[in-house]
Length: 536
Ligand code: NAP
Image (cartoon, rainbow, N blue to C red; front, top):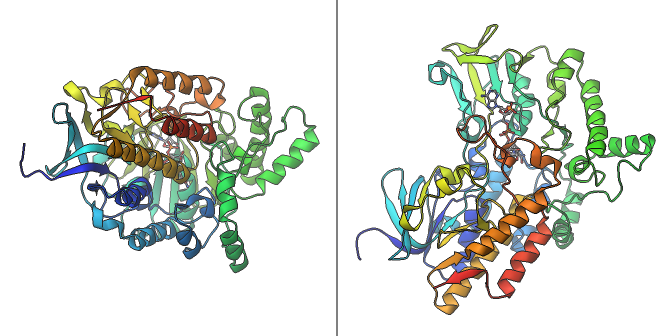
């Protein structure tokens, strides 16, 4: 059939870190492909999340692309934990260096993707009605690309400025002397609150449940450090791939329960004073797996909050009671707890006095109305599957991906192919391993590109996971999740979002058998000639 709809060997959705690297690799294959991105430029997460205080929680020099040694040597990270503007500048540098935009169309939000079983190709429809076709559909949607607003009545009534942190305006927002409200106290709010507090006339933080947080200890990279980092990139890369989540930190082999109270205290003080995720991922090996060890770490972290917050009543409210330390993705902070010592910051406990509605003037709780000029929704995302659910993806016979994922666990093979959806290749789909995202993206893109190369060499135009192999992968995913304390805690990582209908139950959405194990399995599949997949 010939019509005016542009047709490609592969259509890629998403121009973030995944889509950019896909562009580089697919071009190497000489593939006829095109990338479609909802935003007006490259960058994904770092394009959308421009809220004040946004920055890496991982060491910059472990978090950029590693695929080209020249790029590693050319780029100077300015800070150990890069702020969002610098990160976006880096991604722009990458896009320009490899001329990536040439294969990209922006302002193209995909709304549907339908597979034609006979023609063996996907038709993708965008918000503005445009359509394109691709034999392969490759999704680089990230795991946090579907922001969610709170299900509070009256949101449209508010007469001031209101922003979700993941839809932050490109123009600067001034808080100078303004009455500002922030709803939410997750990793995003924990970065934004200390920044906003610096200039706001008054800041009200509407907290439902508090989260644990530890100091980031960011600093500028000195010229000596820069030199040293550049000589150590091979070592840093190797280090990432030795650890559970591809971060530079890995659990201490000792047990918290074997240590004396003095030893524990000294070790935790040391971790608390060091930059980055060490206190979370570099802690005693049983802190995240044994309830008794976790309770000890929880007690230490509670004490830290009490030490840093002047008002004991506020300190108590900032201590999480619904999950132990580290059982959700740990936010790192720069002066978060001290922000509550400022006279212009007020913690509003909306667990005690829930928000009833957003009014034209501000936020009405069960006891009072908080008048605001600016309202910030730091209310998070419909994690992992949310980005997919927002596109009406239909496989053969009109089978909908979102229906498959509605009540059941996704049945994927390695989180790359979903059972029953031919020629759909995902980059960070459900049931890929989790941790340092760019490290995972590079490996998964490489896996996908090698698979495409294999198809081209063999003359195949269709790939599908064998159902029984997807079932086996799911069984492994579930098994390695079984003893994880974090697997039992509601959060975006376990697929829970109180603001999304049907997303109230805990689901397993990642492979937690370790990044190295995941990589080994993927390599075995490729080396074995993809026996787990069906080709045509
Ligand atoms: P989040 O952790 O899911 O937090 C959302 C917050 O909004 C929670 O405090 C939640 O309270 C609150 N909330 C939601 N609906 C509400 C309602 N109706 N009323 C009152 N409060 C409501 O989202 P996030 O902070 O955006 O972070 C998500 C993830 O993004 C992080 O875990 C992290 O992986 C990533 N992130 C990374 C970085 C970085 O790398 N530097 C920075 C920021 C975020 P409840 O807990 O009561 O539901």
